[in-house]
Length: 481
Image (cartoon, helix red, strand yellow):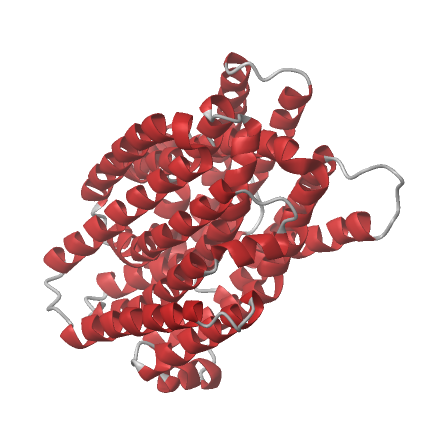
């Protein structure tokens, strides 16, 4: 299982490294540059609103399905159509609630028009994730890897043609970006259904009420966890747009750094996509999960620490490299967000194990604690500190949740402390921070040289301290599923 995890992780990371950084930094960032902070800030608030309620389409069905089919693969054809019918009914309820809340929040005219399309996009995304949960549960990781980058690959192509192809004399408009997302999600969903046809057979629309009630009972803990997580991950965009000192501009400042945070989180999420079905099957077969937990910790937390240190010291250079208009508030916000990414890494390693082990009550209690912290800090900090205040709230929330999940897993699974791993992490942090302080004192170096040397030294130190292992990398390259 550990070798399967590493080999498929190598494939999915490779595909995503080829596509998603270019999309986020090349396309999404260019869209913000073209339409401006205010228009993009409005878009961020609207997409955050549509995202918060998208768990109503799912209600934990995707996670439940992934966990359940991983343990009982023979049920995939029997459950697929029934679950899809449930999600279709939930999608209608989601759309009505999201648009109603948007109306209450005084989104009118153009903003409401965008919200309609963004809500429809979330429905398409939820259906795609449901299909991918079946691929992952069946351990069809290679097919899932392809689907994971298909929508973004198409969006990169379509947006590049319009942004850089000089096909129109008009300035690029934010609604074009939304329409292109709709198109690429639709194409991806059709492709995914074709991939699953051998496993699911024909799709029959049938809403089985007794089955639906039973599924809701089983998936309710998953749903609670996902809804709470959506709230404390997306409320900041709406709150910045509504109560930030500069309104949509504050949201736009936050979006500049959040884009990098979201990109890193996307890659961390890929770990969870692979880990959940593997954890689930290993737990069912009474196998020791500690080796794969340790491997995931080394890879994800090691990379997270490197990224946090790198972007903390070089946040101004990174943002100014990508955006023509960068405020000090944007720089501070970016630094805080990337420190919080370490908590995201902990969640995807240890929160995923809690999900596979069905420790959902404790997972929900931790999430509720995180939501309370997030709301209190956002209400207190956003009106006075804007984007930086929201970033502080996100950092505190992610670190709290990640550390709490780590502590629970160690206690529940009776993991003994790995002092060697702890020493390697501490050594890496001290050495990497030290290198960056030394680089700051060398005024003869320009910003690009400092960033390049810092990045290279962090990569070398990951291997020198033992967090990353050449042997593990070779297993990724040599092993095929």
